[in-house]
Image 1 (tube, rainbow, N blue to C red):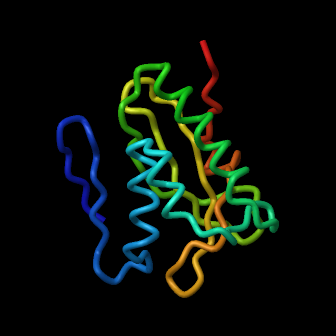
Image 2 (cartoon, one colour):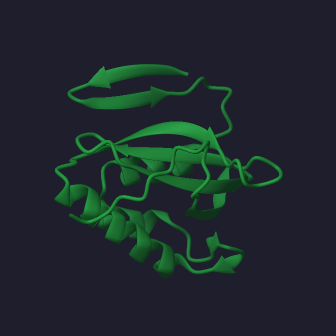
Length: 135
């Protein structure tokens, strides 16, 4: 993976052999851009959180976090990969870090046939998860 810095944003460039497809990367890019409207269209209706299909619960949680990041002056969320330290199988996570505040938000995800089928908050992503708190 190569990083390229562009106007305060870190853009992750994955090798072509990576398992992420365009749709999953579009979802992560949209989260980094904190664009909830676009995210509504990208996330499937049957996405699971905690083994329960609940797209709008997930979107409400993400929207609340976007508002907190924005209130702290963040205009973009940088991304990094991680692994859950709590899960026995070490689930993969995506860690989003505010470009101004440095606060972190982690999402655990599961891919099936190169599509995200599960997406949920992870409080144990390599110990880096810090809950962003409203001032």
